[in-house]
Amino acid sequence: MSDYDKIKLIKEYAPDLAATVVVTAVLVLAAYFLTNLMEPKESTNGHAKNGKNGKEATNGHAKNGKDTNGHAKNGKEAKNGKKEETSEEVNLLAEYGRAWCLHQFVPFVDKLVLGSYGLPLLVLSFLFPIPSVLLIAHVANIVSWFYWMPAVWDHMVWAALLEFTFVLAAVAGGGKEAVAKRFLPAARMELCVLYWSAAFWKLTTSWYTVRGSCAPVLLSELMAGLFTPELVPAGSLFANTFLKIAPVFVAALEFAVAYCLTFRPAAGVVLALAFHQTINLMPMTYAGGFSISMCCRFVIFLPGIVTKALGKSDSLLLPLSLCVAIGAAMFAIHLGVDTACVLFLTLGFLYLRGIMSGHRASRLGGAAWLSFLAVLVGFVYGFLAPVFGVMAMASSTMYGNVKQWGGTNHLVVPTGLLQEHFADPKNTEPAWAMDAFGGGLIRIDETTSPTMRELCPAEATHLMLPYARDLLVGVGTPGRYFELYAARNYYNRDDDHGSSALHNRGNTTVEVSQPPYVEPAYELRRVLSLARKKNESFTLKYTKVPWFGTPKSYAEYQGEQVVLEESNGKRTCTKAGKPCEDSEIALQAAPQYWLTKVLHPYPLPILPGDTREVHCST
Image (tube, rainbow, N blue to C red; front, side, top):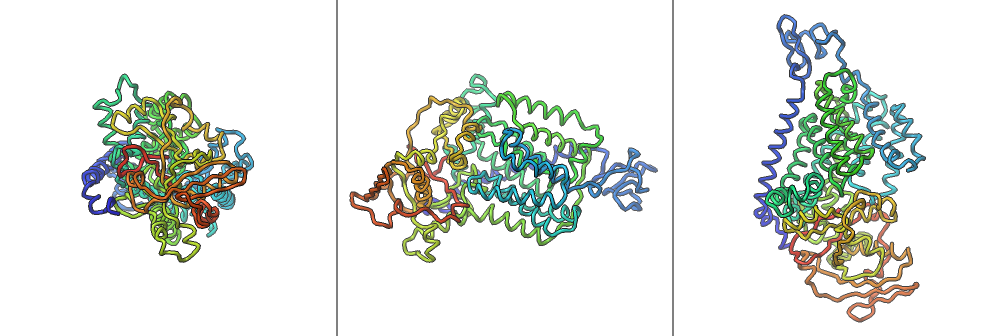
C-alpha cells in the first residue's frame, strides 16, 4: 500500500487535520456560547433564583441547603407561584414514543397509500405509548428494515439499532418509568457513538482533496440554492475560497456535533439542528429523511423538553421567527415543502423553545448492561464494519470518500481487511469465507447490460443544477457526480427513484461518457445475477487488476481481458481469446445470501486525469 502509507499521509495532511481540530473547537465554543445566551438568565444551574431574603438558589437548591428537590426552600412553590414540573413528573416514555411515531408518520402523509397496513399500529402507538404497544411497533419496524437491507440509507440503520436497544429495554420489563430509565441513557450513548463514527469516516485523503471530495459537491448545491450566478460567479475568489475550505469545515462541524451531543446535549441539539438544516437546504441531495429521523430522536438527549416547550413560556418570538424564515427559504429552494420539512421545523421550534424556557433534563440512572451493549453494537457497526469489509453502503461512511478496498485512503484505519486477505490466492480457508470475500478486484471495461449500466457508474452529473456544476468546474474539479448508493437503494423502484430529490431538477442535456470502473469480484457476481434474473442479453468485458492500487494504476493496468456474451439463454466466455475456466468470476454463482443482506460495495469510477483519490458518490 505504498501510495497510502499512513505515516506519509498523516504528514501530508497534517495541516488539514490541524485545521479540523481548530475549527471543531471554534464551533464547540460557539455552540456553548449560543446555548448560554438562549438559556434563561435568571436561572442558576437549572432553577429560578430563590429571591427570599435576598438569597439565590445555587446548584438547583436554595442557598441555605434545606430544600431537597432542587426547588425553592419550601419545596412547594417555584418563583412564579406555580409548582415546577420536573423531568420525573413527565411521562418520558410517552414523549419518546410519540416522537418516534411522528417520524414513522412522515411517509404516510407524503404518500397516502404507502404501507397502509402498518398505519393502525402507528396510530395505536401514538395514542397509547405504553411499553407493550411500542415494543410491538418497534419489532415490526426492525423486521421491515431487515427485509430491505442493505438497500437502505445509513440513517435507517442508525434508527434500527436504536430500536433494537428499545426492544431490549422493553423486554426487561418494569413499567414505563423503568423502561424509560433503562432505554434513554443507553440510546443517548449509542447515538453519540454513531455521530462520532460519521465524523471519523471523513478523515480520508480523498475527502480533504478538493478534486473529488464530497464536501465541495455538497456546498456547491447549497450555494446554488442560496445564491445566483450573477451574485456569486463560478470561479470567483469568493466561491472558490468557500469550496476549498469545505472539507475542513464540514468535517469539523460533524466532530463538533458529536462532541456537544456527548458532553453538553443542549448545545449539541442546537448545533445538530443547524447541521441538519443545511442538509435540508440542498436542492439535489436533500436528505430530509436523515434530518427528520435524527430530529425526532433528539428527545433522547433532552428528555422532557417537548413537554416543557408545550407548556406556558414567554419564549416564542425568536424560535418562531427562525423557523418561519427557514421555512420560507426551503419553499423557495425546493419550490414547496414536504412533511419532513414541516415536522423538522416544528420540532426545531419546540427544542429551541424548551431550551429558552429553562429545560433541564434529569440524569436517569440507566442499566449498565444495556448501555454497554448499545455502545458496543454502535461501535462495531459504526467503526469496525467498514474496517473488516462486511459493510460499505448503509454504513457510517456515507459522503466520506472512503476507499473501501484495494488499500485504504483513511488516515487512521485500514478498510476491507477480509477482501484483502482472501484476494491472495494462497488464502483459501475456510472455503465459505473465500467464496464470500475472495476474487480480488475487477475493472469493468465495457458492458451493454441495462442492469449493470443502471447500477454503475450511475452517472448523476446531468441531474445537478447547472450553476452547482459550474461552481465545481470553476474550482478545478471534473464536475462529475455519481449516485451509486441511490441506484442500489432504488433498484426496481423507478417511481420512488424518479420522484426523489435526485431526480426533480437538473440539466438533462448534459452528455458525459461512461467511464470504466473497478469493484470487488463479489459485486460483479451479485449484479450479474440480477441481470440474469431479467434474462438480459448483453456483452461484458472486464479485466482483473491487482488488489493494491489507485484509480490511475487501475486505469493503466494491462491484463488479460475477459469477454462474456449472453443471449437467449446461451453463454460464451473467453479470456485473452481462449475459453474461460469454470472458476472464472463471471461464471460463478451469485454470492451467499447472508452477505447480500449486509454488503453493497462502492464501485470506483475512473475518470480521465485521476491519480490517487476517489470521487464523490451517493
